[in-house]
Length: 310
Image (cartoon, rainbow, N blue to C red; front, side):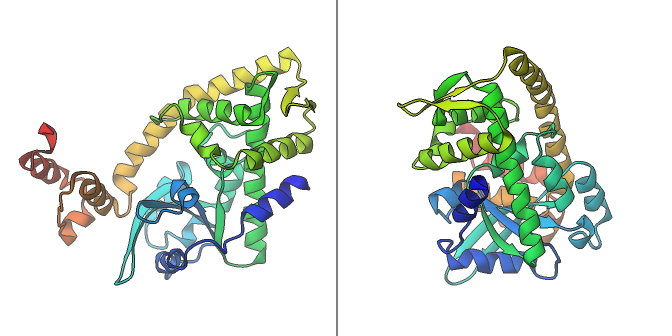
């Protein structure tokens, strides 16, 4: 109950800038999902100049992929598919990386039995439910986010030390999840997630443990002693080792799939090049539609611009 109330208070959307909602409307136009989740560093930092991160949840993937059989099956067997979207008008320019998945996939990926750590590791961090189709959709998505935090708190207890501060349990957990993914992060990345939110994360941890019945005590100097048997910890570490072994191959498979299914991928690459190298590629409609076929052209263009010599 405490965990639910904590999350409900954090999911208020009054502080989300209005252009973000207009962006969502433009992305959803003509589609029939049940909800949109906003997450990532652009949300935490309230910075709209970078890349916004959205998850679009559908009741069924066919609600999004009405005439895209290949993308539908690619997402069905290896979720999520990724799309790149832009909104440009006289007042604002916004860009977003959009992940598509079904409610069933979200429910499975945020549970404790999930081999894939990426989903619950993201959704235990601050997120916003920006848009929902109806009250039932809101409740279903919210339950998944509660599951994500519960799953994270379980792993934090079993992978962490027997005694530590709340923030250290979280930092240790995020370090484990980064090592299980195909990601290169700065050593201080876990702490940056907790920055200015340490009390909130500590409250989540304690609420999650209480809900799971994990035995712990809190010392006068705000340290937690988790009372778990060594055999239970060893069993959890064996389960995590499996997730770590499979994590990178799973992410590599997603990258390969993205080469064929990343909607708007060419525009995304062009934006990244302009942002980091200052080079405008000016893609034609054909190049946008066939990014793999035109990849050599992009490489040659960058070579002549001297990018590889910098």
